[in-house]
Length: 356
Ligand code: PEP
Ligand code: MN
Image (cartoon, rainbow, N blue to C red; front, side, top):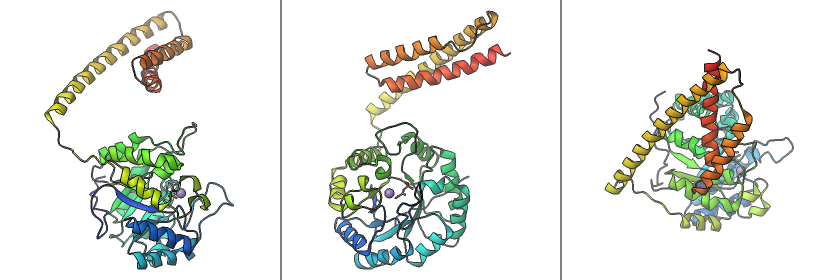
């Protein structure tokens, strides 16, 4: 579906990267909202985020203060001039947020993963075409589900759409709370070059010390903005305490970012890109040759009634090649992934031949 996105920038917010949205994971009390918000405003933050309704993995946790928190945001806005943003997951949330003058909505990762919920929100948004809406990636690394969510909101007449990249659930233990899988956000950029991408290093990292490097990575990838959880007293936060930073720590993180905005292609770069194109041609030729030979192996296996998968051989290839790759200065994980992909395709092709 063809989508022509409009700018999500609200009046008075300049287009300079990064667009910054900051505030606590959850609104907890009027005092916490006002104290955090005042400090953020003094540090130049123009959009205040706070969760009012919190989707929790298990019942019994802090599920957000609910409606009582909305007047706090209104008060902060009146006093500081900051715009406000909250997460919505139902029609009732949308209606309540709009009734209290919330300026921007975002849709959480668990909600984007649910098409019924997305459609309910989209229907509730009809008639509010001036409202910017940010759509977080679904919890699972499924770019189509993310695009589907974007389309539902767009079809409701909301064209001021942006996305938030907050990482993905994974069964593997990693340093991240949610693995970044940057290539999924990059794929979205490839398909929709005008769709603003905001990175959420707080939910990707899950840890204070990862906010800076993740924010820098997002900027280096050309993302448009950052949504960062900030709390006046992070250790005492009622949700996501480990990943929240004080407004002054946030100020420092932002001041340390290096923003590289040059897109001009220099002569040197043209030459280097040429070399890369030639190497890619060679990689393709060699891969095709490998697949042809693998086909001949399949023919041999068929004639000699051998099984396609020779586990010992597979193990040998993976181990040997990852070690070799490491000795050549590449990451063994990367080489393992490459060879796993080549091997999977090779096995698929051999099965085809053997079953012919
Ligand atoms: C949040 O922004 O506080 C939140 C609940 O995030 P996510 O939907 O990314 O888990
Ligand atoms: Mn949070």
